[in-house]
Image 1: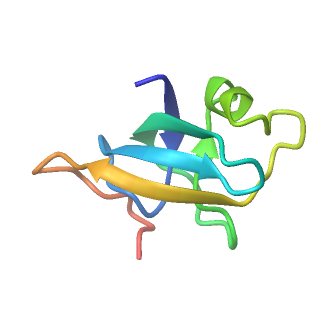
Image 2: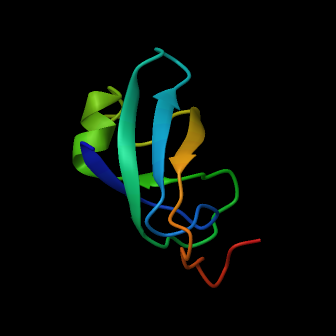
Length: 81
């Protein structure tokens, strides 16, 4: 696990692989916070995760999020749909 992220859709404590669709770079992250439900935004990455995906300078990039594990009793954010 190299970085943390916030999500409104993925349960807290889940581990996921986030891939930058522009360059194919991936990073494994752990969801440790909730983010506001913003249209078009899947995750809010830590600075370290954004740097590993070569998107820290732009701040936004198209990504794919693949959940690889979720704790059995994982809480969901209040704004998850």
